[in-house]
Image (cartoon, rainbow, N blue to C red; front, side, top):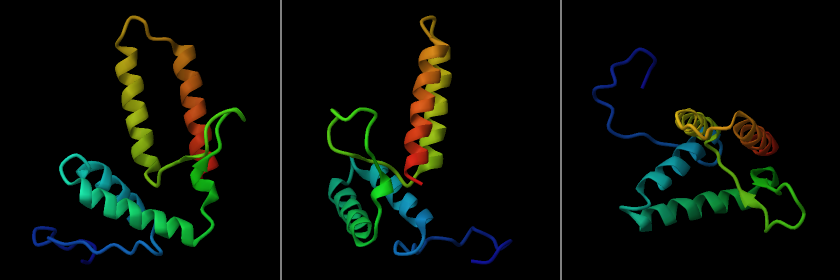
Amino acid sequence: MQPGQSTDSLRYVTLDLASDSHARAAIEAYSDSCAAELPWLADILRTRLETLNRSVDRTQDHFAGFREDEAAPMPLTYCEQTARRLMAFACMCARAREDYSDAAWDHVMKSFDRMLVQMR
C-alpha cells in the first residue's frame, strides 16, 4: 500500500513483530480484543509476544511497583497511547459522579504516567 492509495481493497496486513514496536502494540491489542471469543488465538499471540520479550532485554517493560512489599513486577503494555486514551475516558466518566475527587484522580494519573515512563 502506498500513501494516498485507496484502502477499499485492503484485506490483509502483515506485521513485523521482530522489529516494529507498533506491530507488537497491534498484536497485544488484538489478543485483548479476541480473548473472550477466541481464547486460543489470544494465548498464541501473547505467547509469541512473551517469547520476543525474552529474546531481548525488555526489563523496562515491567513496572517494579511503588513499594518493595508488592508482588513480582507487573508486565506493562506496548499500547501506551491506547492505555492513555482509556485512562482519560475513565477520568472523564469519574468527573460525572458527585463523589469525584480531583486529588485522587491526580494521584492516579501521576502514578499511571510514572509506570508508562518507566517502561520506555
